[in-house]
Image (cartoon, rainbow, N blue to C red):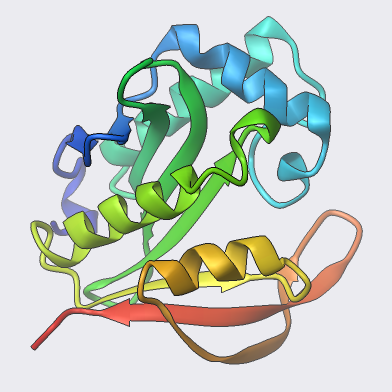
Length: 184
């Protein structure tokens, strides 16, 4: 898993019987549009703030390039029974060896049903297990109680607050740090 040697392990398919994480498909642009149109997710991610078909396809292409460029893995979150993308879960390698950052979002209609918690747990367990990561961390903006709850349900521990750490186009914000480490 050397990020400097080029592409990484291909995107896995992870499934717990309710949630499946899989490679993004060009047909998944409706999911990207749902969060673009809502307007909250684009503020802290690379999801286009203004959706067009081309912008949606370009975003999906960039997710595929994360593996090729050695940056990490971006996977579509689907309900196992349906297969349609309803969210995103990413595991991005940090500069520190054996450390990755977890990120996730769900389209508005898929929130509040435990899908984000399942997706975050699946991806974290894969990273700490199969990939051999030592640590998976997540940064949450204060006030995002839903995201903090997702992490708590997945066994992440709160570690502290990084002041003025997150940079957005028009503002800076603190980050609450949560982590899970490999058993050992």
